[in-house]
Image (tube, rainbow, N blue to C red):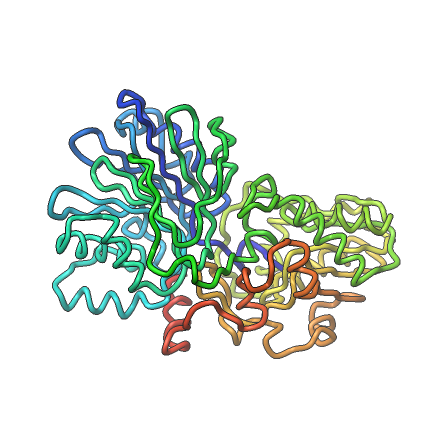
Length: 474
């Protein structure tokens, strides 16, 4: 079950350039980041170019905690980038917040990154041997140093981005601020989303289209995999061989991470989740009295299941939206208390009823078991759990903070074994074939590595070392 303690996406990014030199973009970046807050609640930051220098403000916490009107007023300039973060590589500390900036020949460079670089450790060691000093433990700073190194050798940022892209293995959507110039790049595989919009003479890129809605910008198109945009000049370039590279959009964006009111790579996320609910009913019908979602991201799928089945939709769980991350609880009683802090049952809607419970995924299974116990204690007669994606059998290496393989409940167990461990009357997962159909993108254009081990890029040479590093960094 995708609880906040189980799986998180890494980041959200924003880049804005206004042709009007008198326009300040910091407030627009702030509101866009606010709309992307679901992609990371650990830290936030904004960098702008004021005509002479790149100004940066970063801090730990939510966007509204990091910025105030005075801070935004200080971030002057008609071009800037922003970032919200949750760590998948790199510890939770201010040095790892973004945007990163670095001085180099000709001025300053600042970057914001969504994704995960699989070969970042090897690249970091290479840079350190060359004399580069690091202030953080993240792969994003590795990219910043690589860009600076390439630019020092040949002061052409498009050339530098292409050269760096040839060295990176993994996922990356980037906004790069080089003095007054704003560059945008999406990795050739297209794992992480990135979209482009306009508002008058202002151009905007962001991880999700909801960032455009809040500032009144019009979504124009997605940034294509392997595409490099130079917003100041309105030009598009391509990473070498990008048009011929395999595409693999992250399926979790549609199942869980993206806001339902976003459009990701041409697909309406809300519609996809309705499709998932309808497909779940076709594959796993149940005799029940009410369809109940685990809020919030499972609500559209539950509505879809209800419509397809004719079983009434009802709210049986209320989510406490004001609970942040809880500490790791040493005892079972404390772990159950942590779940109760986040979800509380409505006894009148559950007592004596046969429940179809809809959720996104089961990862370790510990949160799922605790929530099922809560629903049982509220008097549910039967619980039929339906999961909106196939069993997660392998870790993600592209920017989703997920359990290691040995911690994944489905890596060594079949559905019946999982059903008994979680304690439900029946359990049904959506099939990979149905998931692909619900999203509407061919399987060869989706990343399903965590489901079937079919990863779109080479994996780390030492998987155990890589997983240990990521586990320690969370």
